[in-house]
Length: 258
Image (cartoon, rainbow, N blue to C red; front, side, top):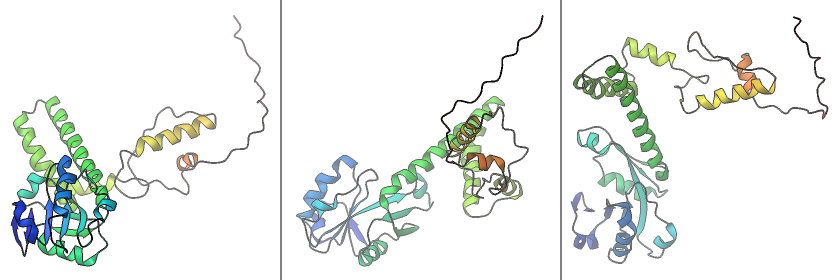
């Protein structure tokens, strides 16, 4: 897509006079098209690589002085953005003039920000993965209750999505607000479900190292953990242990009397 003075075209012939070119093509075609454009465009042109899974190597790009090639990735869901939901373009550049040009031309997005565009793929993947997990979990629970799928579809699209949106806007109702407060970890942020198994493993390892064993963890409620006083937190903290090299004395065996 070639952009010049807020007008745009998808014709390659228009690339010669374009101020900004956005490569919105399959990942496999990015480098080939980029090489062709770099010998075609005028000096001062900015080319955006918007393929999420492709990062431009600056070394070959530097062979064409006067032409700027920038990685720019979109955080957002395509269909949702088409319905008016926000999207952000993360631009990997330290050049303020380039960033200003991109912002001027891409005003349709909620924001155009400078940042590490290489991380956008991971950001979108986490969002998609956790969203799918939530949708599947809701469907399983409601099917177990005998709820029709037609009802569940509305729950996922309206109740789940609406609650998530309200969370980002600090507009939760009473029940959801109280639930969000309870879902707190030891550091006061929302529960990191990827971290919890690792934390529990640390607790078990600490217990085994000290000759104990964790049989069951059954909290009476979810509340912040006192890092200064909690024995569980202290047990999970790695420590350097002195090993004497001597085997501990073995307790004498006892036998039952019949």
